[in-house]
Structure formats: structure tokens, C-alpha cells
Length: 140
Image 1 (cartoon, one colour):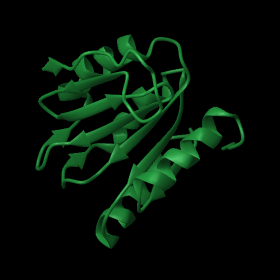
Image 2: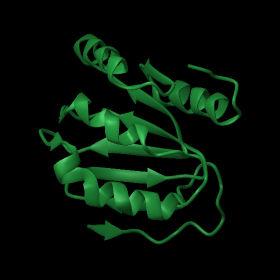
Image 3: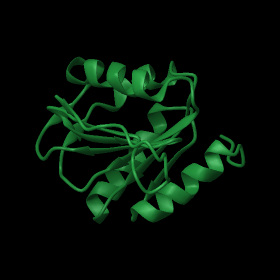
Image 4: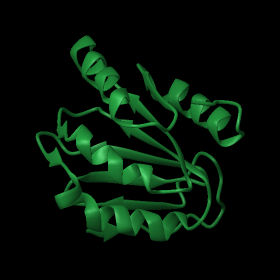
């Protein structure tokens, strides 16, 4: 894993930190974490635990929304969402998909988590929704 330098400005456009891992690229902003998984990987708690720990260290206690920007085709085990339930400062999950099949698959994942969850077809909409979640304007 490589870690890009922290963004000292903390601007909303530039991530505070970027993690390039074996499962994908994670961009960490003030209140949003965006994951772009590598093509054809299987993301699970087994291969993602060390990444999750690194993200938790970078985020600290700030409330965040996780956005999975699914620009590549990869698989996830929705049963692993139970581990995300245990993260108190994770306030919501957004999935961004780019075709109907991926949208339908991501929509099914909502059944596996009780935190605010939404599927979008563009990253901008997901970021806007994340802002509402952080501000407490979205409830389950």
C-alpha cells in the first residue's frame, strides 16, 4: 500500500489523504471517504480489514459517509456490512453505479445495513447526499 501526502489545505475538492491499496484507491476527505475498487477484486472483511483500520486511523473520530464509486466491476460480500455497523462515526453509505445491473445489485445491498444507505448514478449526487447525512438531515 502507498500513502499519498496529506492535503494541508483541507479543501473540499482535495482529499486529506489518498490510500492506494491492493483492493483499490481510497480518498479521504473531511467527512467523506470515497473508495474506487480495482477491477475484478473481491472485497471482503478478510482482505479489507487492514485497509479499514488505515482508513479509521486517517478519519479519527470525525463523522463520515462512505461512498463506493463503482467505476470498475468488483464483488463485495454484503454480509460484511455487519462490521460497518460497528463503526460509530460512519453515518451513511452511498453506492455510485454506472449501469442498470450494478444499480440493481447495489440496491439489494441496502437490506444488509441499518445505517442511511442510498444508490446513485453519479458521484456529485452522492456527495450532496453525504452532506445531508453529516448535517443530520437524513434519517433511517
